[in-house]
Length: 157
Image (cartoon, rainbow, N blue to C red):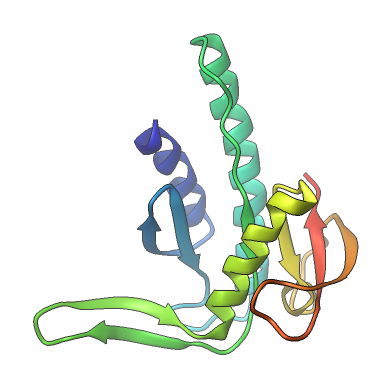
């Protein structure tokens, strides 16, 4: 089940030129504008999220035909400065992204459960978009571990 889900979601990440950072249990961390910065990283991230939402709908249709229950996903998108590169030791290096931006994206993803939204982006992402994207403002939202509320927007397919 997990491989089937990952297969479809990673295809969406790669379709938009994203970088697959890692699998974390049933989660996926992807970055955009890494390792080479791009002017349209926010557009690519949001396009990927919308593609992932559509891919999950298609997967759930397949699962329903096989008599299997639907899957749900939560997507959090944030933008900001990060440390990008090889992290680790001489025995094991891993190319990854670290910083508060990663933590906030994870907190946005977690907040999807409370808001019952499948995908949300921060105001930092919205302000970087060059493509029109349908979204609903959710207002300033306090995220776990963050001292200041941030503007969140729910993506609408």
